Image (cartoon, rainbow, N blue to C red; front, side, top):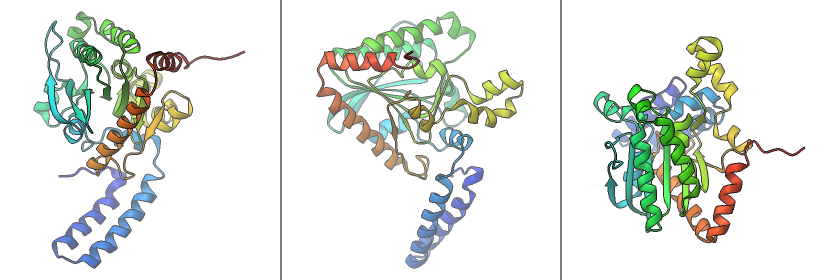
Length: 311
């Protein structure tokens, strides 16, 4: 059953009318409601607040990394384990084909339902998850495969076990290794991009965000708890933090914004997957046209540009 946010209720009723008309085979009524739906979608989604975009990024029906992998990849094979401790289900790695291109896809995976959420640790990777991601990236480098990284996490897991197994070192190691890796890399925020948990698979030649995704150094709830000692002020924190794709693009912190369907990836999953696929293949083609030195020089300049200034 579809889930609707507070500001989506009008859309819910219109979509129910469309379904009812379809059941009755009343094509004229169905087309009439589709026109009404298009107008309502344009009205609502063209004027979203930053907090509403945050809600969409966390929407229960929004596709997760594995959903996109299943829609985009063929002849895929999952890679398990970090060869040190265990297999972390919050990070998934698949080798296969996207549009005829042999690729490695690394994603952060949330879960649906209590059992699966616990299995995926609510999308919060442990150190072994990031080490698995690095192992997969090194494998891609060895065989000359482009890498697609799908970011979707509230943050790296902050538990005692994760700290004992050097969470910060695992993240830092990924930042270093991915900055130096000799293959084409594209990273896309598909939902939440939370702090170092997102950065650990966010260093790439091209870093993009989907229209309704967020990228932040801390969650709005955490920010409001620290600044105002009140987690309920998360909406004010969201507006102040500048975590939407538009804000981050204007600041030069991301390369592109992927235009998922206006109504959101949670309503048109296949169209969202097609948008990611098209963006990835286009960027890989452009990166392959560059020499290794050109690509690495461009990556270095991109990664060192934030915070630079001239007197």
